[in-house]
Image 1: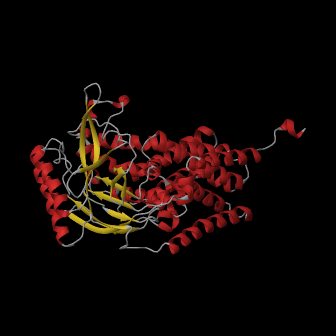
Image 2: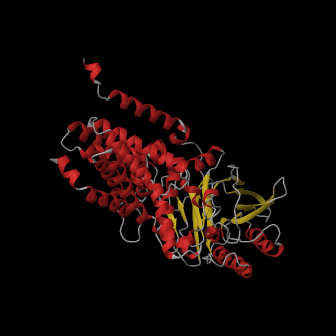
Image 3: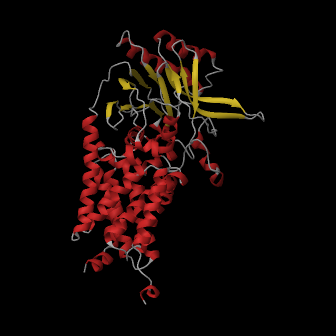
Length: 514
């Protein structure tokens, strides 16, 4: 009876999964993060009830396309307003991105179809671990891991504390195992396993939050004051030369006003990604104003700039750079963005179409950097991430491996207008704080600037789309989490576990039974 009902309602299941995904992520209306777990549940039901493997793949893929396109609708905004594409074509491009990412949902449903003959407990574990592998693999291959389940759950820090042991992707797989176990509510072994695993994850989260009280204003020798300035500079104007001085004056004015409210303090000053849209080394007049600010404030100043240098062949290379000035106004170091944004900072060769060129704006194609070393001043060891580098776990891992005692993500989410993208980005970044046991500073042009503690809790948060400053304090931390120490051993262990369950629960062949 149950299987017949499932076979008769694939459309309802598909729409339910898509709606659950949309409702779990920040969407501008209402958000309930645990609803994210209903997507893998619906995909598993779609796959296990499908009449064929092809039907399972199609159903899971289509359901995921609808949900992901709804969450990622804001991709149309930069394509239309910055890339100058017609809105209809921008919408098509956004759906194409969602379609590529949604293929993971189709593969998940396909696997659920293939495993339908296994016992329910084995199915739950095999599919939960498979979810982990899919999130991990798509982050590596697709290069746009914007919709992991952890990104939704991060809005409720209690649910993501175990990421300091498992990482966000494996944690998502464990939560998928929970919901798939609870699906079999008439089977005590499945329900018991699901409830026990949920109790372990939530209990661990409650213990971690209890033993690490929230510090809105940390003090002591291992804490540092931080001043963020949000210039709210129009994305379509910032690269126009006539606006360059006005941009510098905006950041100088905002910073000086906030410093005046905190006399005697020498904070780390943080300006956002490409806050200074000119060649900092060659523009002596404007760069002198910025260096003089650091000198007068006796504060280190971190800002985004385009970096320029020639390669061995004499070709000019352009970098998306984070530049650190010391309190004397001298350059203390720089970091060049390692993981570039497709279409925003480069166009893949296989999609090098002329109509996409406007997305690159005035700078053109960037060159990726290669150093993970922190930017240093005094006790500060700044593990730099620029823009959406904060969504990649291994980049934050590398920063801490090289000695970072605080993570810093400078970004410009003004591309996405008044959409939920900035809040989605904030929660994704908070996963890196928990995984690595480091506080995270997030400085942006139009918001949302914030300080996030090592448990993924926002201690200070700014607004959006207004000239603004934000003041707070951050704690510098040492040591390594279990997740950091395990590193690549986690996927290996998970792979061995998956194979063990798979071979240990396979049906005997007819020849074996004779």
